[in-house]
Image (cartoon, rainbow, N blue to C red; front, side):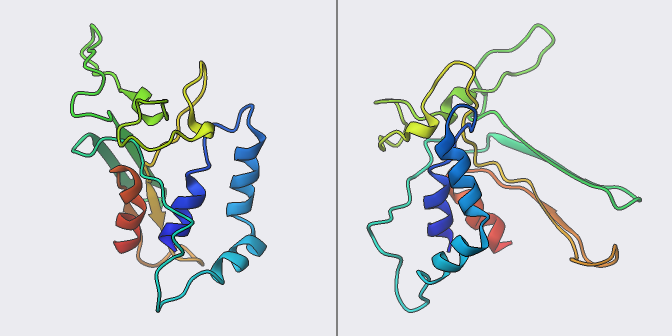
Length: 167
């Protein structure tokens, strides 16, 4: 299931100016698409090798932080922030704010960190937002306000989804 999800997510990027990204996202939440993808899942064998899961070009390491808050009124906020490297871009503003190295989230020809083939939906372009694997997650009961709440986040590129699912 995770291999299917990551394979689909590899086709995501900034939807502005790219209809294929919007189409991919709509397909990912479609009940009919989910039904057909469910047929690919078999607990007794591995996922077909022709649908390879691309690895995220993000660097590993402790370069993200998160704030998870639940107030007395049952409002929940989950925020995950990434610098993409332990010291981000290495640039500090005069007020002491360390700037992100968000450029690493794009696919670059011959510059992608794991040397994978760059995805056209996530190529570097002016004004474009890069794909990110930060996953702030809130889980609550399907009905009513009572029950157990869970609020968590993860980073670490393509391993974030499996971390969230395991928790």
